[in-house]
Image (cartoon, rainbow, N blue to C red):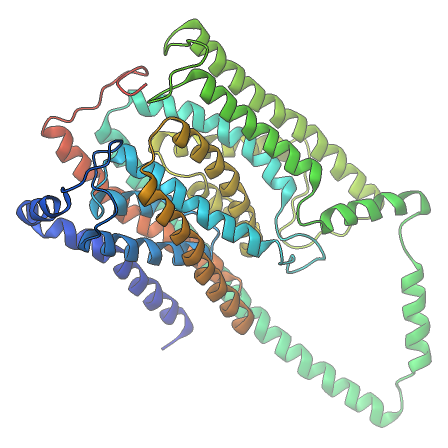
Length: 481
């Protein structure tokens, strides 16, 4: 079996395993599902109306196993896996979507903590710097959040059928392009391995011939090396170049982390100020009022302002790098006035998709980074860092609004930590053993492909429920605001 076929077979087996539980529960038919619900209905949670975790039943076991498999697949690509977890929690565990999304977020938060903790110990494959591309992260995140804000409003106005169809199309196209990117990277790595072996053989033959003829002169080599080492950037730029390298070597650059934390603190504060669900606005702001729209506009304008400030910083920093003779490596961006406008606009669209379809930003931005040419390990680590911040923000909001069933949330949080750890260790071992980072791209593609199937199926079930009378409230200030 060829390596390419082996990858396809493994991905297919993983997909079948993760999809088996939800499909089995749905295929059992309404009568069987009702019997399962009756068995579990002895004690109901006061918040969600769902049964409490104890006593556990078959649906709990099936749901946790399916979620663990999905998390292990997602771990390698740094993606949270919310696109898989929400359908699993709805179709297998039996939660309503309103409460399945917060539980998915708590699971993703546990996985993100593991991902970021383990990635902090890793270095860039081609340079002595952090694996996370912090410049890309602080440029992408503000407009991704702004886009999600817009997409959330569109979600409340668009028909359910339109959202479901567009979601499946988006995920299908994304998974197809991501898997194609993975196969291209795999083929490129194969060609590089072959070329390296041929070059090593040629160099060995040349050195052997030169030694036999007495043509190697170690003194000349040492003098050439010394001359090369002596050459460097002008003295006035040496200190600036050293400062750039020192900052890039940090796993968590303080001021960049501070920008992200400040941005998410702003987002949480504005959401809490508006209120919602079980948490009324402390300022008496009602949905649709002037205060509501003023708060929303302030949040959107602040995110756009942060994006423009980061853009100016990256343009100035790139000019300094060029002046200092900074050496770029494969996958680096050369930020200029054009790219710092184009890529954030693409991220804004990604954010709109995330807000419109109710999926995490990682499932959109992970493939987007690969499409922009970011190295797979860097894309995975950067996406994981982004997910940690977004999931922490969402978890704070969900907990405050009283939408989290705590007994399930606590156990799913720890499931996220341990399952992601297993997946990360497996991917790290695979990359070290084979030398192929393309497996990260395959992991991302597998997650998006699984999400395509599960979110599509979940959408059909939701449409059937709506047809039976559970209609969408419609309007931006419908029920639940």
